[in-house]
Image (cartoon, rainbow, N blue to C red; front, side):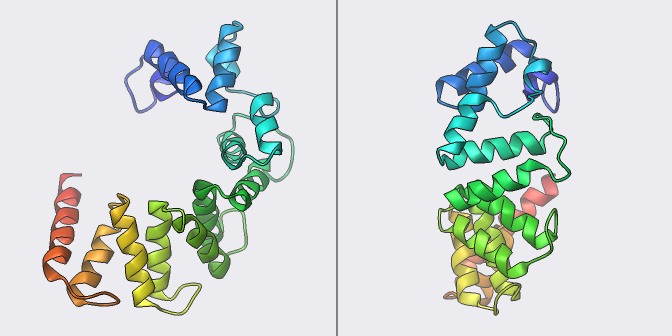
Length: 212
């Protein structure tokens, strides 16, 4: 979509359509529905404005498919599914997806609960949702949950749990977690001190920030 619309990428409609087709072949239900409608002669701008969730996606979601539920939530939040309800239906679909086990939905719900975006702020519930995602190795959720344990937000301060989660986040590729985990390693807080590794992470993070 980014290539097709020239948003943040070079304008390349052919590549955009090819990537949609590739995603459809890989089993992405949203891409499959988009490709079906494109083949039926609709323009992509029309395909992106649904009156209701695409039928194949809705069937999967109603059958408890967490990722289908999360995809519908994202379509609502992006404005691709039209609605007249006072509260965006995406909130409900995100909650269903999180309950069904989607780590991405759990992480997004945790962030929303912490910030109060669409919900009353609830630090404890936010942390529970982030922890569920982190338990499925979601790197950003592990990073955020680690910070909450480090700072005592939504729970008592726990350096050991903070170090475990931040370490998991780094292991899974979170660059945001490198600085806080590096500091814990240098100081030996919640984890055996390892200044060499800690400073390696801190230097890596600093170099990256200087190149931005």
